Length: 306
Length: 306
Image (cartoon, rainbow over all chains, first blue to last red; front, top):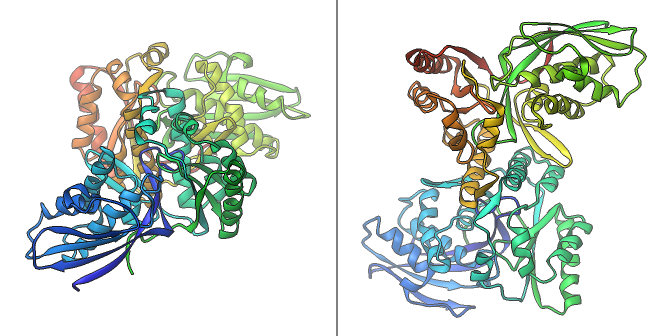
């Protein structure tokens, strides 16, 4: 195997009640990536289509993630990476994570799998650090492991794959508005009331239970964010209208995808997810704001060969 | 059925990472309660053995819980309750919850079960309000439902029964020291750092996942309390030594039971739980502090007929 082609999925981080710990992997939207072995050692980004992004390995999230990996292993050969970018950077559905996760998954495969998926998460986090200044795992974990994932903790890094209920579908709408990462961060208060934290962990623990028991009504009752949504939602025009529209269309619940501006909804069944998509899109049509919209099964495999 | 005799189990609230939401039910320690139908309507506490507690129904947790229940239903007859108190009040293993849960469970049975267990939780909480000033459910929920329970939230009240791994055992040591409830409460800070909350919900979500997958090593890695244990443990002399002793004896983890002073440990298998008991007891022997100690399977049924 000297050349592989990969699907690098988009992901939703936080999932309402799981700020900084929960994530899930999408099926219908993602990048593609081609990785070739080269006689020249190291890593080279040969081509990027679809977006203007740096080719220099040290300045590219895929490059940085692979460099972190190659630091830990001897290899007689190197790698050339071609990225077909379909996820828009800054959309809040794990654009940088898809590139970082895809690159380390592919290079690991070409090296005959010296690293576990959990180790790959740690390397991919280096790409996230380049992209956002913080080496977080809440997008790269679902991109690599698939399904619903939990970042149990960072010291040491431990990532768990949770059960994914079979009929669960996601809708994601990306309004073409810019939310600056710096703004999305600066609104987060560093101290929170204990009472709200208790509500949040009741919802999060309830959601994890509901994922295992595949109890869709309980999922719906747990999809609330007491902490971050009230801080960040003012940055996303139309947020509450989109939430209402999704709920009225039958979605189980909805919230900010990652740090936004994308808004996700979860539904039982593809039909309801499509209805939610239509209703959510109407809101931005009325606002005259352009948008992309995706309806997707939960992808339980993560990055995969094409 | 005119008279029933019940076992009213002790419970452990919080379980390290689940402050105010998690609880579990014990098998080897609890009160007994006899409830008889009487022609006189209302509720009467006829006798309490084992502890000095008020007989007046309005001042007794069992009485108050039953009164809350009888407020919601017409009954042609009344009830007489005899309590054989074996759990020491103030020990931190749900003494008041056992009485409140037992009384509403028994009266519901004698009334031919008009209420669900979840409704019973709401009535039993009224007993807790009398005992501690706050109508909390984290002890009455496991006492009524058995196993591991989650108080998902209070508005509206929703209590979930989680899976209980089959080989899980609890050890609880009750050092004969007084921790005043007022002190146990006043040390709790009402604002907490978001970073610590995130660690806590990673551990709690991990623990819930581990309960379903019956992953004992993961249970062990999740039994940490970033929030309340550091605030309350200074009130319990020897706490850290007991924790160390339990861990060295092979326990999965340990923490404060409820608001203390009891300390619990969880172990895989009864033998390890006994070893943990011996090691934990040694600490208080050395300190010259009297103690009670219990080793128990997790009771997956909750309150039951004897």
